Length: 158
Ligand SMILES: [Fe+2]
Ligand SMILES: [Fe+2]
Image 1 (cartoon, rainbow, N blue to C red):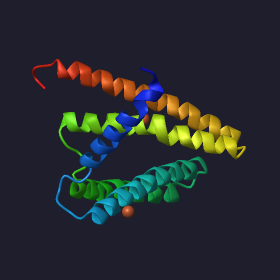
Image 2 (cartoon, rainbow, N blue to C red):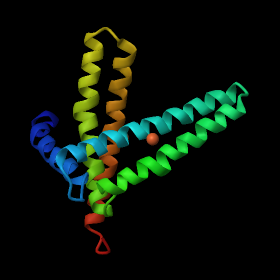
Image 3 (tube, rainbow, N blue to C red):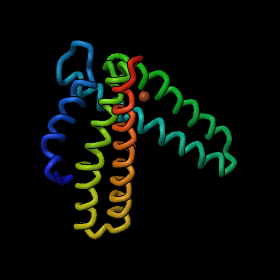
């Protein structure tokens, strides 16, 4: 079977697993979606402020670097973690592995593949190349997680 012919059934399965992985707690669909959007925003802020802090440190602006680091940590340790708890983001190892396999699959087969095509069509070649390379990396992450799943399924302790 070719990689392409596997895409649709596995994609359906991946979406099903991904939806199940977020929101173990009972709540409305829109609230769950808002939590997911909030976590994505907090994660982005956390990483962006870390990078801003690095830039400020490079410029010798230590007070600004420390402020960015402090706020970056709050975005993660307070907001992201509380939202993750409310959403039931982190579950047992098996469920976490299934969620990671699903996400990496979607990133490699759909998200980055589509983004690369769109960037190429728009003439944004450097971005298209980056997305294509990222798609390959995500494929490797997907394979590594799948290999771990296969290894763990033969492990009586799991
Ligand atoms: Fe925040
Ligand atoms: Fe990845």
